[in-house]
Amino acid sequence: MAKIKETYKNLKRSREIVKVLVRHGLGYIFDQPQMEKYLEISNRFFLRKKEETKLERFTFEERVRMALEELGPTFIKLGQVLSTHPDLASPELIEELSKLQDRITTLPAEIIKKQIERELKSPVKELFLSFNDKPLAAASLSQVHKAKLKSGEVVAVKVQRPGIVAVVEKDISILYELVDLLEGKWFKGVSYSPKEFVDEFAETIREELDFSLEAKNAEKFASNFEGSTTVNIPKVYREFTSKKVLVTDFIAGTKISLLSRFKGEDFDKHAIAANGMDMALKQIFDDGFFHGDLHPGNVFVLPGNVIALIDFGMVGRIDRDTMDELSDVLMSLTKFDAEGIVRGLEKMDIIGPDVDTKKIKREINLLIDRYYGLDLRELEVGKILTDVMEVIRKNNIRIPSEFALLFKTLITAEGTARSLDPEFNVVEHIQPFVRNLIRKKYSPDRIIKGGAGFLENSMGMIKKIPDNVDWLFKSLKAGKLYIGLEHRGLEKMDATIDRASNRLSFSLIISSMIIGSSFVMSMDKGPFIFGYSAFGIVGFIFAAVLGVGLVISIIRGGRF
Image 1 (spheres, rainbow, N blue to C red):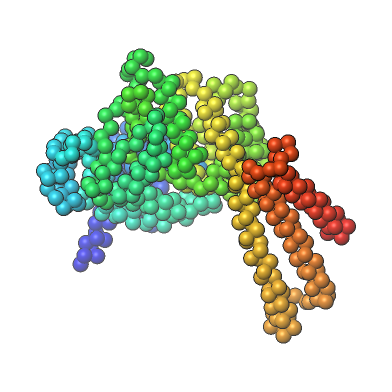
Image 2 (cartoon, helix red, strand yellow):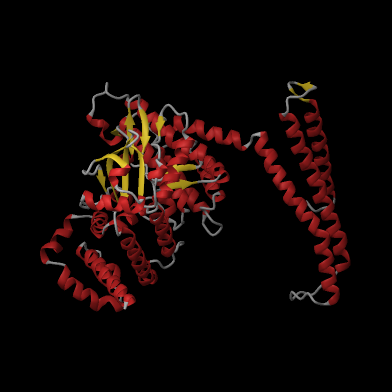
């Protein structure tokens, strides 16, 4: 009985979704034989003549945005996630989706207080010295109230709307059904699966519904910016935090989006733009952990041009190797080097082996011609990134979600900085971070660690070679190995493998000498030659001599 009731609710919600899409002129996406009769009924009941004529006043992108807003929390969040994917949506659609707003009424304070008491197992009067019934903000997933703790701290209390998890889960299940229904019609020949996008979206919104995860994110940001004089991250009060309630310091600042209303002497807009941009770049290039929803509503300015962040539900992560590859792309971008951009995108596995790289390179070259010769102050990295992503989208290439979110963060941060200071030089701020990354990439410490890892893996492989070769010959001799080939000249194989193993071992010895010499060079111990360790220099020279000898041996053997 419960399952029948759930199926009925899903059917009712599905009907509502179709109704909204039809009303906004988007019903054609269901134009399939099995849907024709349903659509005819939907159009008859849901689309009035007056509404039909109204549609002509709006663009396709505006109608998508309005439909998502009307469909509520899950679909608003869906649009926000889609707006981080320049590989899936056009620039026009992304711009419109960035305007998505919750059309939601605030919940009475009594309902919010009951939710707090259920989660924290204590009456609100015992938890807080005072609790403001009027909300500071209301969104589809939560509502925020100002309060004061018994210990005197003024805090912001973020409370999840009761029943929202069930609503979101129902909508997610319907989204999967819609994807199954539409995949064959609208997603033929694309390089990505729409189901993967729904998977990503479902993971994102479920994480946002767990406020304990948001608390961890906030604490990590606070740790990363500990001691900073330009960035403030609100403190999390763990004893008042659960999956559905989050209590942090109240930020008594000015939203960065409202700074245009103030006179020049009230704030130093250039300093604010610089602090905000450096904050975003540090998150990406130094920490590999960045705010994924850096729109102006989540950024505040405190006295002294200090930047304060709120809302840590959506974050991005990027590992060290990927960061190195990204730095190469951005450095190529600032040098207008199309070949370097494409090479970097290949290293990042954004451009695969089946993609026509010549075509991509040609299109990026044409794109770069528009910007070549511009003064650095006029150069908009976000605009170039957007154009590069448009080339990628048109060539049906899928960008991994972490890169899509990262590019969106960079574009948003630059847009905010330029809104404060139109002459803001973004390249000037990016280049030191990228150079620092490149310096770290080729530092003796990184080389030693990387070489040690390579050596360890290689030694493991070499140890297995004799056993594997022995097994191979025994299998061949016993006639137990069949791979559909005629085996001839096996008597030469042993000598060939032995020669290859010797060369590989010799190469590893040379690599070890180079790594060891690098380690010695980094130590502050004499004797010294030109300020460098003599032992390290001798090691490098000896390794070079052995390396040249190995190359000569390979060339003489005719196997170069």
